[in-house]
Image (tube, rainbow, N blue to C red; front, side, top):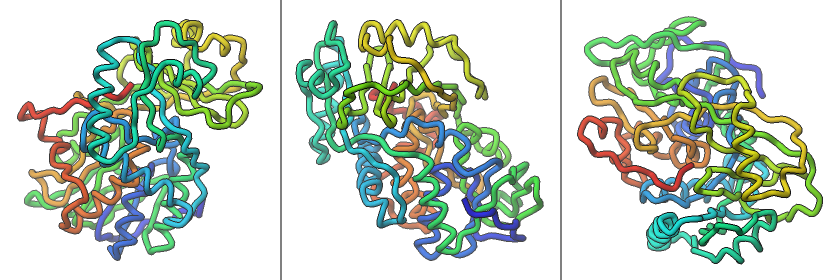
Length: 387
């Protein structure tokens, strides 16, 4: 990526976090004509959770706001080559959820009905249809499946690069290797950001710090209930005769998932024994559980070697829904964080939303249900179609 710019003395708005959220917000603000947009990233762009993501994109959710954010983002991903102008290796091969209990089938039937009402082509399918789409799946124990033909996967690093390059071209300043250490506020008005490279005067801060958002928000007395939780991924060796159109496939009950990654597969699964914290080292403790699920759901994978993998962080909230809005206790502190595993796929739409909130416009979807204060008023709305 481009050599980072020097830290300016002042900015109209400072975005903290250089993943898909931060770069998308920077692009959308700069495209809208906002001057002196500054993005700060303590490491390299995308080095937090974004480039550790599986890269799945979908609108298959149980919550109407998430459906809208996912659908809007799918449109943006499909047009990414023209706007902002970057190849992201998008494969719209579909999103397939495998279901093994009557409760799961009922849950997805309900969410599919909601998605259809909102214009999405998601449909319930039979086990035979699911196996035809993903032949490496063993049908034993499955009762049904849910398929979203417009979903799929793309390359997170390329999405970040595309937004960052376009944001710079439009006049935004992106500074890497610059850690935010404090935020100054006078009479509840943001006045400056203190960093490892100096002080920047500003009247607005946008928190897009992902798993690190809680500490940043605490600097201005804002409570963002985000908990970091490690998730790990492995990549397999080449698999002969792997279907080119293999969908992003999730065994909902076990959380085991996979999609094509070159000639092999990218494979992941949650670990119920994982403890919250900033654990970024790779471990093998979850592999026995993974192989146990493989033996039941995709036994052919047991004979395939692994070529590598990585660990990243989910940014989890109590109801598995994002935190998007503007703080009430301090002027011009906006936030977009806590996406609980579906942040990458909502990045384009959330960039639009934060742009509009900053400019005082009405966003394309009402995101007030995602205000962080909902936990104070027991106004949570759990997202059920997440693993």
